[in-house]
Image (cartoon, rainbow, N blue to C red):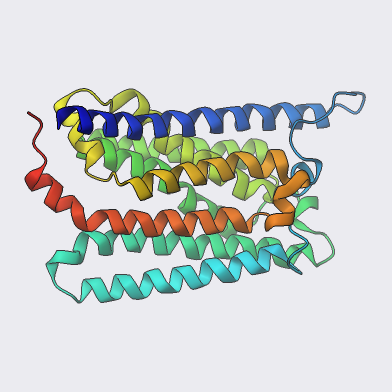
Length: 292
């Protein structure tokens, strides 16, 4: 039994490692391509897809406006999560934990939907998002709210794993949020890169600290990793990581033909669904999972 539990904990840990490596490769490649684009005399070819580097998204010919389609999909997912949150809050104390998770997922889907709506609107108007060099204050506020998901989730996870105190966790979350927001506000700036930056920041700030602070060998680490592990959630998380990597690198070759950025939004919805599926068995595992 111990061997099986340790192997599953190792898979959970390796998932964080893979996500961190993939996002770091994407981040380094993105920065490299941006630097090459800033040098007119540079003859080096870009590693990211040309359309993705230009638009900041993988737009698909399957939709009249990929952003509007994704915005509608995200809004519908947000409404479903909101209804679930309301139902669980009124259904007794047993669903409160899932209700809290749904509240965060609801906020993310609505914020993501708004981001797509803004990008889609400006895409069909003169002076599109790709031509703007700064975001309006309200958009920066929305961006900050979305970016908070990564560091706050990681801080909560590390506090739950008893790796850091609540005070340290909250401080870590706030400082990390300020740091990643300032990077976007003062360096990247271009609104068309907002969702790409969101994906990179959330995954990196969620996964990388867990790689170094929550392992897979000690009793406490195994227990905390098994508390939210299911095979369905494991493969769904891998799918999200794969989409995050493939969209910028292979947009022009095949991703745009399959649905473009919508594939990523769909993967997020699947990941949220599998996360909720895993939660009802969490309390049972806490009672029955003993590391001997």
